[in-house]
Image (tube, rainbow, N blue to C red; front, side):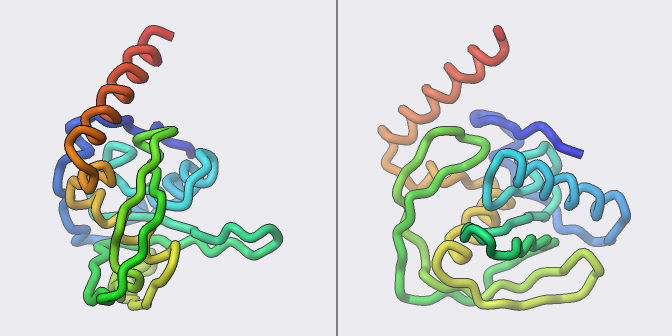
Length: 172
């Protein structure tokens, strides 16, 4: 089931999410809904607070090549356990901040540990777009948006555009 994606500014997007302590069918269903919502948007990552749920859950799939099999990942309680000294700059966007993009510099490679949908601990090293995406989504779980990396003036400009968009959508 597709869910509605919250738009910035929304106070729920600035909250730190609670760890998932008990894997339930409801949480698995939420993860499936989030994947459906992400693919439909279309996006490459989505965090639970973006659909109004303040649990430490993200989904992502950075496969973009035509004909390449999708690789959906569901991560409960994801955490970065190591990051490279090498940095990468990517133009980031966000489903909660549509049509706004900015360059963000982050570690080029990160080691991430998480719990999968079956309750098993996983670890993997991510690089390139995958590394940027997983860091972006984990930031959401800590109440941080990609625009928080920008200079105040640029951040305020994007926030004003989003406030105006939300007003227009409310009127429609």
